[in-house]
Length: 200
Image (cartoon, rainbow, N blue to C red):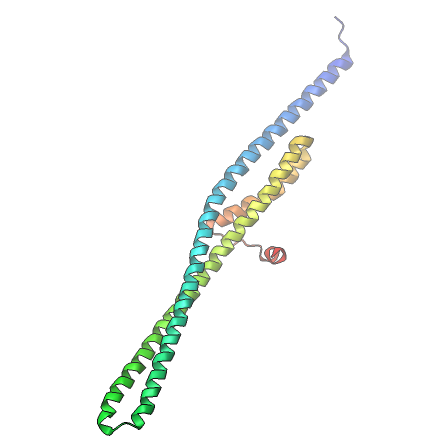
């Protein structure tokens, strides 16, 4: 059996290429599995944040509706007090004390409604602040999700083309996607406002 040195070199080169391809495919598979797991964890947290945003938005709307109701009640009480003052001017002096008592009662109702209205305003503003805080974290998860989807697409192309340089290119969106996901999970103050203004 004759051994051709060229055949041996070709077989060795082919085996080395297959080993590189196997390592690349293993690296791609492990990276995709880790990213998919990380994206799942982020999705659970993001869904909880979205529920919190919906609750904060509902609370804000409720508080502003109650605020309007308190304003109307205060206006009605003030109008009634004014009408009673006008009616008192034409009433006999014997009824003046009754008018004064009724006027004082409506003025107290006005003050009470205005106080409660101001409390509702503070609650509505607090709900808006809570919404904005949660929205910032939701933006972090949205960006993480987009970047990791790009990374997974690049990794799929890497598996098809078998190019290590493309794998390293895919690590760039992977890094930033994981960074934004961790920022969302840990409530870190990393937020690309400029990018979101551009995309909004």
